[in-house]
Image (cartoon, rainbow over all chains, first blue to last red; front, side, top):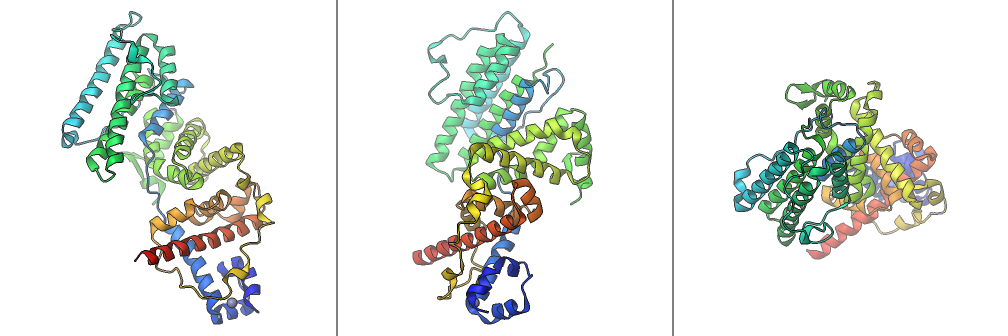
Length: 211
Length: 201
Ligand SMILES: [Zn+2]
């Protein structure tokens, strides 16, 4: 048995299904024994790999939107709880700004639900309302959500559009800080919180208690 | 860890959450999402090597879960069932994308570059003890997609070759051979990164 013959049967040998002759070569040939040891080691280490990362809140928001769009979860029946990051006071002024934004979203939403058909306040400026560019730019999921809102509650669409842009700006700001300093834990918390607010916005759009 | 002991929320076991979700309870479904999102996302991320794709596929997997959960009969563990569903979602996506590497039958046979010649001769230092998680994750990420998928399914997720063959629509022999090539390629990558690291110090 030579190295080439031995290595031809490596998959079986690694699995412990080698012949006596192959085992003998594996024990005496340093090159082949290193190879076997490495491959077994890689397989062992792979088994120890744990799932490390959570998906961004955007994923859950997208799930809610799609379920609502398909009519699988009806606003008056299904009720998703928005995720809340605890300990909001740790994050200073930036977080307070974020909390204000969240409250504003809720307020807009309430105005929207309480005046069905009448249409809530109109936006004072329309120049910045084109959702396409800037820090508050919307992605495909956002557009989809707005389409759902426009369909189900047209009078609230404008409010959502504005809130969406606010939250997207918040995300963009936090992301910028984090890009500048990846070790900035505070910025990371802000980003998470911003995503949470976005999830909350999606939540309200898809599960608001409407009559 | 048994299914009955896993808690989705205080006072709500996974088994109860599954039953409630089967009756269309959205909150129970959210609880199941919370419990399984990390593993499903990691699976998608490792199979695709791309964050945006992995997020989309995680979303799609849970949407399918919501639509199909009523058909879950408890013949296997729920997590096993869910992960199989997620793997199918990823494979379907990769097929749609038309990645040639996914069609194993084509890429397998002609490649013999991983043959024995390479390793005969110089005895390199062995890898044992030198791999950390980050290195390994990075090396897996840089594997060609066809190798990566088999490696993730077999060595990380613990699927058997016959299961992989069924999911991928290839032969068991192909699955085995692809896995071997993946490990050989990983060995090269890890040795390279080890050598680079040594050169820096
Ligand atoms: Zn040898």
